[in-house]
Length: 124
Image 1: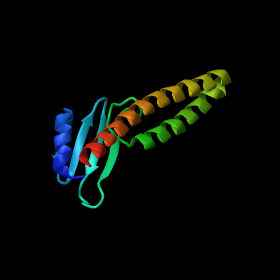
Image 2: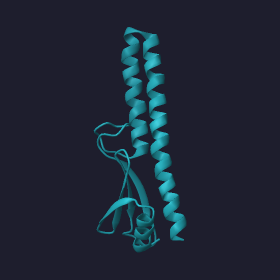
Image 3: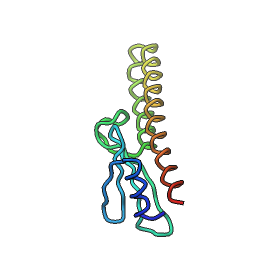
Image 4: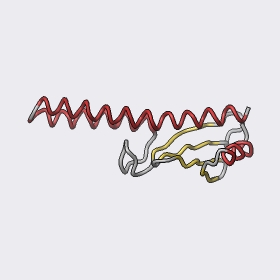
């Protein structure tokens, strides 16, 4: 995979992106970015990042995998605190939060994996 051919693919599919040294940063929808690192010619690294004001982490910047873990841990502790007052409400809160996390995680992961597959398939 080369940086020039990747740029052509992104232009062809009308993705918004910018170059930073040997890296292409692709702007996805809803505060999601894909980073394609070409610094090592033998191995291209594709990573994702959620930036501020997204539906999984709020104002914090982190990868999707870290965001899922973050939400599970925070959700568990918040549910535990709510359960001290009302156990049913705490369980209901935890279930609702996990449904929210699963839906948005699926959205972000599917967008990320789809773009990765487009880049890999069109560059070979």
